[in-house]
Image (cartoon, rainbow over all chains, first blue to last red; front, side, top):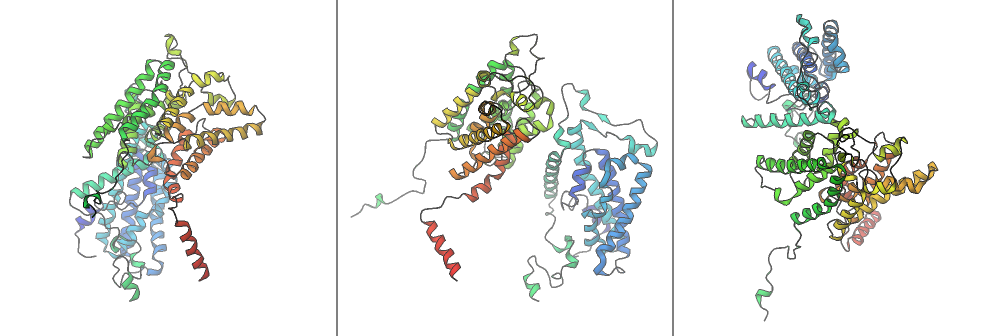
Length: 254
Length: 335
């Protein structure tokens, strides 16, 4: 860690410049799978954010207790506990969302955003910084999935917030079930390919291009994927202490 | 004494052909004309309107995307117009116009310009647009075929739809048109209804040396052989079955006008043969054993993706290279 960052900076970096989905390209599978509808995207985003926040805090608290040889199993146990809690809560209070997200809810356990943040950040930072990082990354993930879902649901199903009553039911509102945009325009039908896999990849690519463009305009460099700081394997890498400079030839000899 | 001026030379190339992109594209447009006339005769004004919307939108999107990317304008080379006509030829006459506009957007902006414009597209733009439309709007693209000549009878013009010969061949329900009708007037996409007009256009392109006959002949030949073999195993009248398969669907349109696209077909003759046989095999397999009636568009797009690999495997050997390589191998073995 070259320079000390403030809590606000740790929080903000996850939103755009190091957005886990659009800039670090982590968690692609749940992103593509749950971005077919806006309600699913919000549900998935909130679940991931909560798990990420809690697991980052706990892992950061335990970072000096966990032996480095068994840290990955330890991280997974911590993450899995929080995922189980979230899943039981969703099953109890929003069963429709549980059905819609299906296997992708328990699969948060092996989501590379969570493992990546645990390994790259929470395992070697203090609690408050880890919490800010987890919250920022979680909100960044939610925002990216939500943008994708808005585009895909609007063009692919012709609706906005379809099935919103399942989420709003938590607050006692069940009258709003989404807006059916395309049904008001005669002769227009939804473009099915947007909710299918090819449309998902296409939207993903477009959003990535937009995120890169905005980040470039702000004068920020591309996320440093090559540096040790963002590499989840950095602490396991034996080249690191010898000063890994990318190819690591020198360090390997030393 | 030698005059110095005789030995000076400018940078290569020294011998130029008079072919231009514009000239080649104009030839393709001329070759597509008979099929366009046939489709207008069969489906009426609507066919012309679909083609006009498709061409207009393709040219417009080409102009706009070049402008947005701050690149030189390329609508003058007519390649966008050719894409527009071929796209229209891949659509049924009854398709809503906004879907045609969406198809033009996919083919020009997404497939062609996002990858760098003419010559840089990795698959045929019109074909990929057809596949996207087919996946997006299965009802409009695959289930409503206007009956030929129905437009003349005003009372039935919008109502009548008929199954394509391929659907009849596959399911066995309904009666096939006579072989004469199969060659001149059948239900289907705009461009595939008149096999005779397509062959005419293909011959024109071959005579003008715009396309080489290798790809169309190998493609159609492979499908013919596969269908004959299948016919014999089924014990039906194999020759008639194969002939029906050859003139139905988009096979002729695909073989003459889409598989031969310069940017998405292999360079060497050996590569072209591999490419065309692959197209023919995939088409036959989809038609005979897949759950879709037509496989030409998928087969060409799949083989388009393989073209860089085919090209790498079929690099022609320069004169004298083979010997050197063999000696080297022998040396390695000896050591």
